[in-house]
Image (cartoon, rainbow, N blue to C red; front, side, top):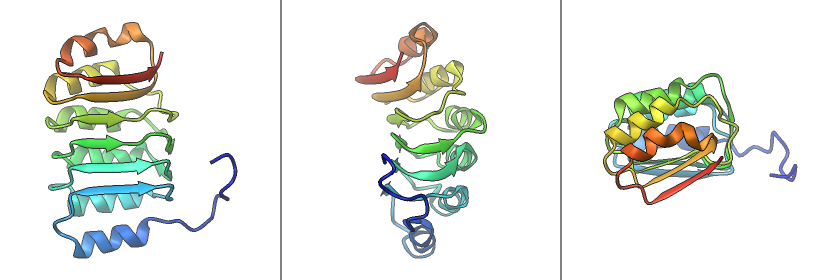
Length: 165
């Protein structure tokens, strides 16, 4: 945010997540913008909404890591949209993407553009393209275009692709 918002400005998503987990059983789409999200928040969402969550947008959010995304990838099997663009994510490993590749077959949009995520397995991207026949949009961070040949072959209905190549 160009240092316009101090690190501890207080925009924590935790109270919202706790309320959603306890009282909003029919909620399927979540969009948080410029909020501080913790890994525990993502874990609570995965446990409480994992069976029905169809869209999770963490737009320009911070405070979480790939450990939290691992919970989303392993438990949110009906996720159609995962939007992480411009979020500040602490990268521990690429296992979160592998979980999505192994557990999800309905993904339509995956966006982690303009993040610092670089531990991305191109085999996992290709597996997502093969398993998710409705994948229409993919926006990735740093990549080499030649590493994505298998992905492009498998992504038969892809309409939008964006990446730093």
